Length: 124
Image (cartoon, rainbow, N blue to C red; front, side, top):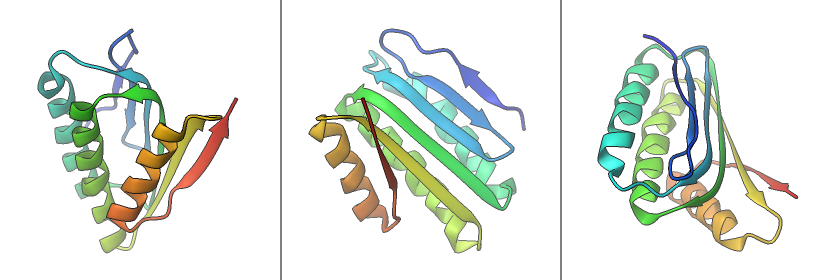
């Protein structure tokens, strides 16, 4: 299994998927073809959870994402939540800009749906 890293563009987020236990999505996610972008990420996460180290840290630092991206982000987080069932630790850091209630509320919703506490980090 190889690390997966993609630079962000104006429409796609920066992606860092490291087999050592670090995952980050950052920037904007407003794809024309979200399936083509996210399906490799979902496949990587599915393989990762089978071989994951004891602790996984996930940093979500998105300033904006559309509804099709939201579906894939939730799918990835659901897969990662399976780590908890196998006795591993999962830390999810959800960053949002000061005053951006939409991104904060989306993170709170995901945390509630998944039943996993997130660390909410307000940035300026």
